[in-house]
Length: 457
Ligand SMILES: *Cc1c(COP(=O)(O)O)cnc(C)c1O
Image 1 (cartoon, helix red, strand yellow):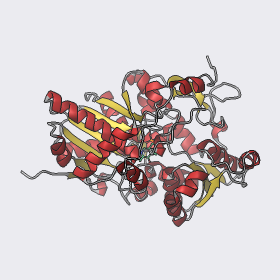
Image 2 (cartoon, helix red, strand yellow):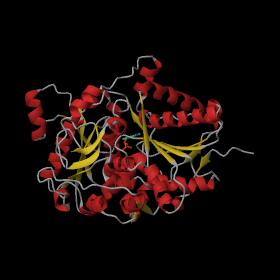
Image 3 (cartoon, helix red, strand yellow):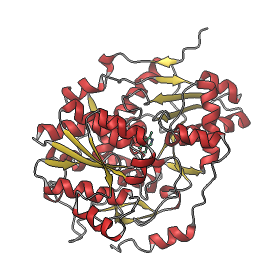
Image 4 (cartoon, rainbow, N blue to C red):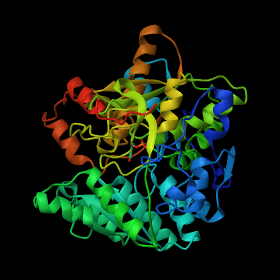
């Protein structure tokens, strides 16, 4: 019998709606506390958010409609790479000598190489619909900046990206990609904003931080009536847009004749690719299907689920965002400079945090060396080079597969391979040269930054 390896869907099977978890918090027994205005400590209103986001996205952020229709213009752009393939990892199963059946959804086939355009495209679309002319954002290593640059090019918007200066100088390739899509990329801190000038006055050689870049991007959006700001993870509307991933997977598993998965695994930074894979399975559970074990994998260096506290905190270091209740390490926490730049965030999306509190999901963390070991094992069997962020899902799947080898159980394991590592070859080079170290996180530092979160009762 031939071993079918890829399970592809025709474009006609592209999802027509996104699935909104807000609609099912009741049946799931999950409580979602309100987002608070940091000045008044009252729940935020749409008017509070209107200077930075378009109304359609604010409605999606707060709305509870179970299925939100995907505009045809967004589906047209999705068709450039969606539906994405689901793979059965026959070769890796053999290499690991496991009786487990391993499936992975591959989001690295998008134009930017990750799941992020699933949300950058609709965000650009709704802004364009409301007459916005330019979007601003921040980017660290450049994954989100490239996704937004691509989307703005597709939807005819200008894109202004504030890129953390050290990455701008040390990681030129994603910058070149963004500029090729016609974005304006500015190293942050810059003299184009008040926030940037203030930092440069104190420290002309500042290498920048995500917090400073956010302040610059938000300042430009607030001051320019034709500009708004876009965020690549954490918020409800971002997680909503990612649910095309899991919806496709459910159809693909059916076509594969596969069992309903026993365990679903995804890496978590702010929670968006995790939500994208997992939420449609929670919806199916509400509709009567069994609930798989659901496992979030985070880096030891930014362990918001496993070591954080569930409390109100700012979404950013600069304390410009509303207060959200989430698992957080404290907004001052600066994760060690691991190679998984996309997972270096102090908090976890409020929805994913609430699911964790309610006991619907489990979380584990890993240092980066064993994660790269798992990626090497995977790439030698399957050929696809995972982004280090995605490697956390690979590591999680490998642990489960090896546990099956131990127990003899033939479980069905599903994970999200949310991006390729073609822009991360310097990390692989360091790994192969034996130069990668496991950076210890410090409980002291977590305690210190947690002491600085605002007290809300
Ligand atoms: C940005 C990114 C992440 C982390 O963000 P989430 O919102 O947690 O998904 C993970 N993997 C890749 C490949 C990314 O680009």
